[in-house]
Image (cartoon, rainbow, N blue to C red; front, side, top):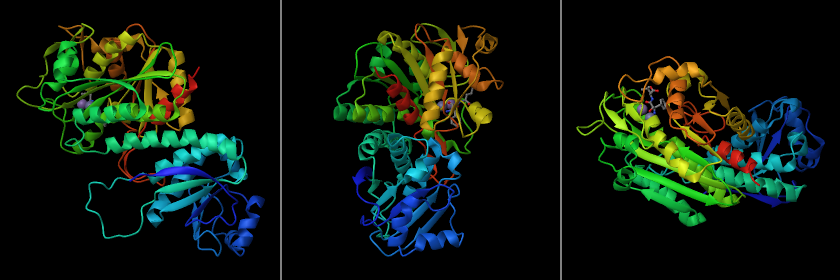
Length: 494
Ligand code: BES
Ligand code: MN
Ligand code: ZN
């Protein structure tokens, strides 16, 4: 279902719309809404004096006033001093989610100046557009069309009553980030029997065609030719062919930012098989790949002056008579040998080959993103992703991008003391170190394959999908990483 946002330059009063959503901080009704209140026959003043709405965070009130807007939805932002990038995004998402459940085809969002205190009109518009895309997303393509004949939400307008040019500029960025995140969620949500490695490659090819990116896709034969032994070892148990995908967007000369995304389209654990409970969630094990593809949608729309390469190693992780076994020793693309202690530690195997493949681009930096360890969920829960790296400044830059994007990341240390966890008796490294410091040992494994560039690693196992609805989004895929990567690359424009 296509969904879009747009800027409409119009007066607040008299704009025809099935639903007008107005974002309000916890304060008396602002003077800028006086005319709207009047047009609604004083309904807003009465609502406030009855104490039925005060602008608390996530609070909503729905009115059916007389006038040009058929419905009026108020969305609370919380205390004025707590207005932030996150709270604007959140309020817009709540508005879009509500508009969707109400069944209106179109809606209008207005952020009064009082509700964006401290933020520029452009930033506020960007954040609103991001939030709208977040809240409007749903996936129903695999259900029989229902008898419910209410229309689908197709379009939300951002009302620019003043500051039109700045709002238009900010909206352009926010709409691109929203569309990128939607691309990511749309492929994340697909089940493993549909979203196979060759399907992931077809999505990348479609992006390349539409936006004019360079693309290379390697099949099993070409991956073998290139000696990516660790990726091949994971793929050898599967009837589905692996793919190695390289996308390139060259918006400026110079060394590229390389983004590497884990694309395991289903992770059974292999011979070290996972328990049945929640195994279906392992269709989300390609969320790192989805984040890279979503970021390329953003690059294609915004065409910023940056050079970005996306690398996606993609495979299933299956048990079978041909599968890699615990104890097997394999040779990676870099040449280091790996003792496969646990076939469920497959993500690091496919990523390590991509990291050494990245050397050919002489990268300015490499960022990888992966649903890598259950241990990161124990450490940080579902509210932040983990970040590790070889370069403190780069890690801090990633943290800053995440903060701007509303996709929090928190650092874990890759101190030398942890290196021993990955020492093997018979090979150069082993792929699993046991329970203590599980996310750090995975990071250290990757670090063994980083040669010649600053590198940071994002572990999104706790943030890539949710198991329940919240006020801003339905349960399922989050598209995490797209907004962070986008803020990161936009921050590096020349
Ligand atoms: N894909 C999983 C990590 C994961 C866990 C993602 C939970 C999302 C939610 C990864 O391939 C994995 O199985 N990791 C193992 C590593 C262990 C065997 C060293 C883990 O975390 O248990
Ligand atoms: Mn696994
Ligand atoms: Zn995995």
